[in-house]
Length: 170
Length: 432
Image (cartoon, rainbow over all chains, first blue to last red; front, side):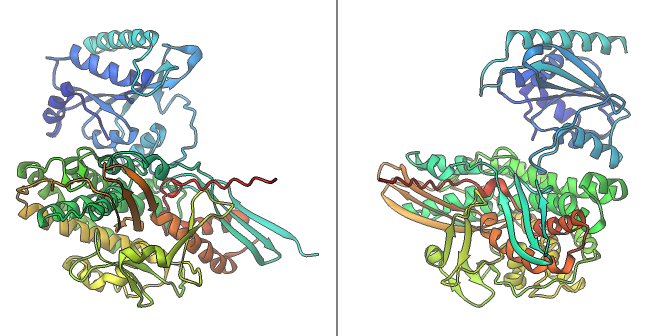
């Protein structure tokens, strides 16, 4: 389930009504090393976007299936997650869903849906926003409860700036 | 020369965890059927030894992300038996409410996304959603209700952290629970529609003379208490569970297999067993819908377990609503106790069936022994036995099709393989 930071709590309350959220940013992650990348970007974006129109929302998720609870009225979804890629620490990569090819791996559990499955399911039940982007940040250290590496932190900051500028232009 | 054939499902899909299926045939004669469980052992029982008993509910919750409440409930009841703790009626009701949340989220997921695709000819719930978006959306919303209940009562939806030996660390305020009522009222009606829909599915004509086992409580549909009861008429106090039910290691499974009695017979746990043994204690709406759809009990067709799950979703919503509407925070959220040496056991009803825990603790409050028997490990032998009986009816030259039919039968039990592989029995043989 979602692990919302305190800064996000107000957003959850604010967006509990209908027809408010249009652009949703979801950071996927866990508290373990570089896997915090998605959460870091979401929380930094949230801070930068404070005072922006209510059509932007940032959320933190542990599981891709959390998305399914938040898609109503969203027209543009951005998901950010860490990708295990020790040789490309801090590298950013963007996919446009569903146009770009996305490598799928078989999950060992069908009680936990991966991101591609969740997006497919959202498509099939008619809830996928028309515009979906997926950002990946290359990570390599995932020891429990450790800090993210410096390269990943820098990459998070770069992505926050890039996204904020994009939102400002939109 | 008679040809040997192998039917393999390397990795079962739409079940929790890692397992496969192996069938060896000589001609059309079935030589061997194995539900192969190769998920690595998870060592939970050994992990608990030496830990404070207060840590047990949080550690055992980690056995499963789908049914953590079952592990928490079984562990706290067993430890309370060891400590001589008597909980209040208020705590008891809150625990039932928590279990309702788990049944709702687990059953809703299984019914809509994992098992219904089998009956409608889809490879997955995602594929099924193209043609049945309303049903899948409904299932997701029901599952969310269960998770919400776990969040409010347990502190979080996955691996709750609010369950304590003696009660709860914190009882929810009334204003935290009452906002759930409108959604749960919708959920009750949705559960009724779900069950009516499930009753329209086409079920294979396959019945077996099952020995079904569940808890039976004289006053309520069983969750946390009751006598271990078989459809044969036999019944046992939970304290006698280990005299009747035995575990053994087989080479093809990292989960212990269970059997019953001197005959070492397999037995069937889960919603179908519960409904068969407790139909009259289902909630009024669940009973009414069971009558309306003509669900006859005892039902001995394992494929119809999906309907039993639907009836239990209705029951869980109706009972949850009753508790939510009348809820007053308990005067005492957690009963105090003193550490003392002792042992205690308990059985509760996980979504997949009866689960048994036994602990021994010392006078410092440390666990010295733990035994956990999950429902899936108990159902393993029954699943293999079912397949031996079912295979001759479905066997064709198309081995992929045969394998799919086998998987469909396995999924009737909603196996949670990750739960079942918590043990490691290590035998060291030294020669000389």
